[in-house]
Amino acid sequence: MTNKELLSQYPEINWKGAKAMRDIITHHYFDIDAEIIFEVCKNNIRPLRDTLSTIIAEFAIKPKY
Image (cartoon, rainbow, N blue to C red; front, top):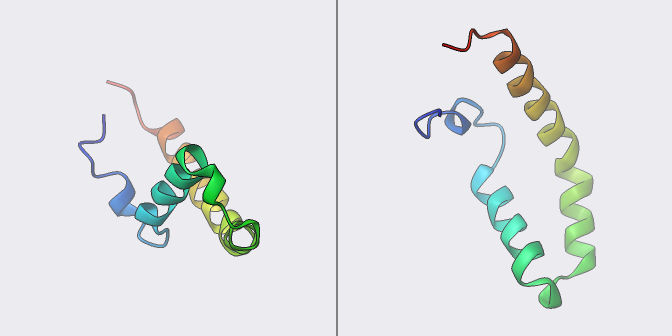
């Protein structure tokens, strides 16, 4: 839908790291260090949430054609 150009418009987020974290939580959950997950969430959830809200808002105002 975005020709793989969407995430590059928001370089403030480490998208590769976010995808890797999702992979670890989903597929390697026995190897998870809860303290590391907590620190990552504590430091990164708010900026990620804010960026995702921006993306959603920008898609809501763009015409769909």
